[in-house]
Length: 244
Image (cartoon, rainbow, N blue to C red; front, top):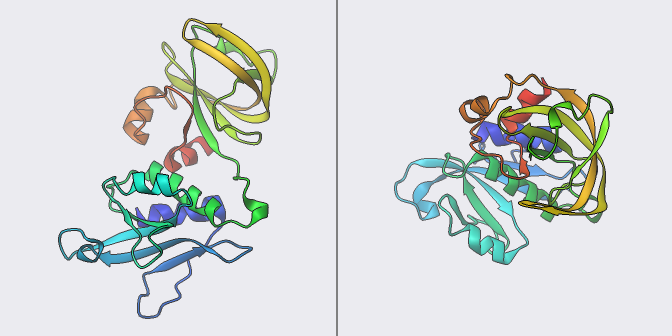
């Protein structure tokens, strides 16, 4: 997991580890390029110093969160603790031993990056999403046969510039398209049965995938995705595979 978060921060934020302490040469700091503020500190700490059982060493990452209510919720979760050797009101310690899943670790890194960013970078960087498409409501298999850009239901949190991967539900049960979000917040009102749409976004086709490449079985077996019920982030290993 330590190698995983190093790779994630380098790929997403172009951040390289710094090792400022000669005595603790495995402890690495990650900074913003502009304001030089820390957004992550990776350490190797004995469990008993964290209030955990045993004296074995464990890799952890310290991350910042400005939302006190959210912080209080997080530290109730196994593997997330009040910050070790940092301000416990604004920082948390996340164990990198698999107790906290890689997807959540990435989300917490993103939050810390935004919490420590300069004002000009408070707008989050583009994000990748996996979103479901139900062929019962829309002929998604042929949606891009005639045009390269279509209107689509806008998911919460999706912004212009984001990338969306369309997962087509049964009977296809596979990711078929990679698209770029070119416009958001288009007013729309639709309600029928279980489908309610209040806003649309425009998505532009960038890439097609064969139905066997990223099937539901492959998503479960290779990437730990067991359901696609709404917009969700992309695990790092899936992101890499989708780019190939």
